[in-house]
Image 1 (cartoon, rainbow over the protein chains, first blue to last red):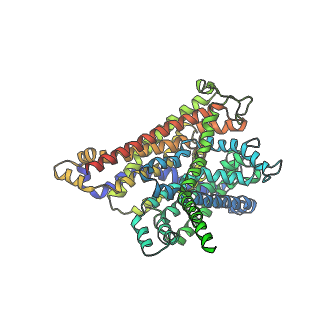
Image 2: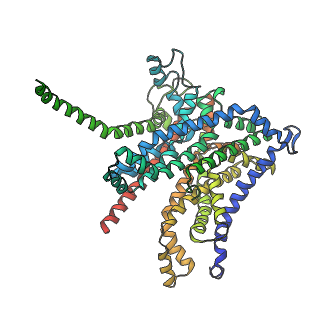
Image 3: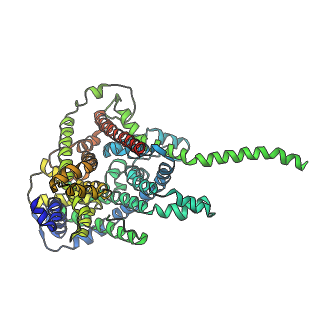
Length: 285
Length: 285
């Protein structure tokens, strides 16, 4: 440590070196390789060669526009539903939870302790044609006698919403919990109605959690393919399903790589636009 | 006449008003209870169906209680080796990622240095990249360098997506940390290493433990990135995926329930420990 003491300026770099090198080699470099791959042309049997094949991108967008739009649509709806569902719950735990807060929080995280795929399979059981939910909905004629939930957008969006709920509820809870109760009391002392105090004090103060929650939900939701695969049919397939099958089943690497970049670009653009709109600098810590 | 109706109507009105106030006051609580039920429903299904005695090939409909699935949890070919692989990867990946992440967190919180902002962004990026892109890019790298897919590629993938979580977890703890304790140790003649091992490390030990648990949980649950980079090997989630195509056996639910049980015991223990510590802190103060 004598060396470190004499060269204090180096210390942070020595601490960073192993981890950053790892991320550099196995996160940044792979993205570069993916980018190069996306500009190759040829075939799997004769090999792909790099020749600035930008057409991969145009083809990806043109041929799979529906899948891209559906992914964004499903992710946006699921994010909104998760927000509407989680906000009152997080609010209740933060303001009414008392000394049981941490234990109640455990209920929110509990779904994460069951393997993602098994959780989704459980929804398959719940929404199955012979299951109680479909039976009830048929009885009250919301669904026709042959109506189903599985293999519909409803099932896929419901699955996505459920699977990413904790990502929304946790950051919401964290920012609600930090709010100084006296601020809300002050607003009410100054004759703000309960509702107005919520809109003008609580809601703005919980904005960082709301922003973090929406991003943490939207990003994985847009790239998801498991819910569409297990709860949907090919009609509900999202861009993740296409990328997955092109990579692993059809071995059409360049086109799959191009789609991955389009997806990433679409998400990044939306994230930055959103971050600008709400004007938060909490994102990168 | 009018006076009589007015006096008769008043008590009824006030009961109604009181009822309305009661409903309004408890509406949120009722909602929270329903919300928790919704979040826990699929978990209950998973646990219940681990005791199911399926009549045919599908474990979708309830057809009788049995303990057989628990007694013969590894009766399904491949399930034992898949679980062992998941545990090995989870253990190694969480150790490596937490070690690398702790060093990065120390550098970020303790030192002002050139490139700090860039480092923060590099840590943030993997968290905001859809898993499918992480998996696809790493696959492209491995394909291009002709890597042998298997244990090593899975381990690399898991360390890669765990590092950022480790950094964030440890950083959160370091930020609220009193530097004067370390200065005091140094003033009393402790070397830099002695200060680190006797003062810093014990103080951030809970954060390191939290990071280990979090990384382990994320690793053992991961499907997407593993699916792209596993080659011929099968982790537990990959096993579930394969089994789901032909109807997952109840043993899948058994292991899912077991993982859930271990995680809940660990979390409840942690929460109770924290509550006790808070109480003893409060009584000491």
